Amino acid sequence: MIPEPRRYTVWSVKSTILENSCAHQEERHVIEHPAPEISRKSDTRRRILDAAEALARCEGSGNLSLDAVAARAGVSKGGLLYHFPSKGRLMEALVEDYLGRFAAALGAEERTGQPDAVIRAYVTQFRTECRDKKKPASGLLAALAEDPDMLSPVRRHESDFLARIRANASDPQMATLAFLAINGLRAMDLLNTQVLPPDEVDTLLDWLGKRLES
Image 1 (cartoon, one colour):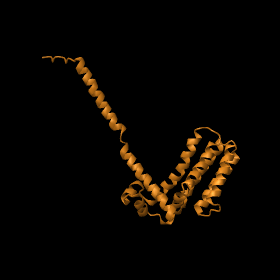
Image 2 (cartoon, helix red, strand yellow):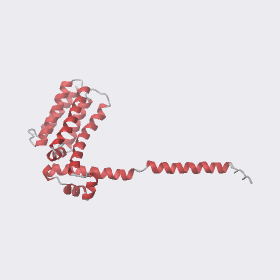
Image 3 (tube, one colour):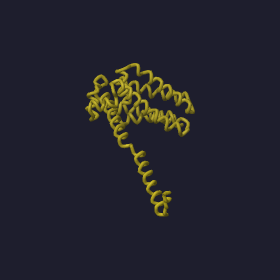
Image 4 (cartoon, helix red, strand yellow):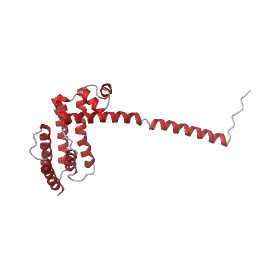
């Protein structure tokens, strides 16, 4: 016998559509929300980098060990090695993190298209780190003490920063002087050879900011 064709009622069609729609919604929900695990990994990585930066700042780069960093970050040694398989990889990440802060600040202002926005962002980022009493180069110092070859990526990034600053500047010569002034202050901070007290540095940066706005 030929099987009787299946008859669909309006209700059965609506039910089928609804079931399919719910199934797609559930599938979409699963796909769109894998974030908690990624977020936890990102938070742990951030804690480790902050701990390494703080140790380098407070105790000196020579005392930076993976055990000390793990203890400060509140993670196990294995947990630290999961994110950074060696001390060299941790040092590389410190350099990338340090340079990344400036790259992000410059990129945000660069997209505005306003003249001198990039050099102002460079100065502002430096001032923010000074205001927060974070030696801007402590993580960088730790990395360079571990592997001086890491100067190469720093040099490349700084050359790129200067090229972008000059391209955006209304007065490229003035912008270059401001860039060099910031790097001079940073170098003294790096080597602990500061010759100006913090209040005079702040006054100098105020003057520099006003010159860049005029």
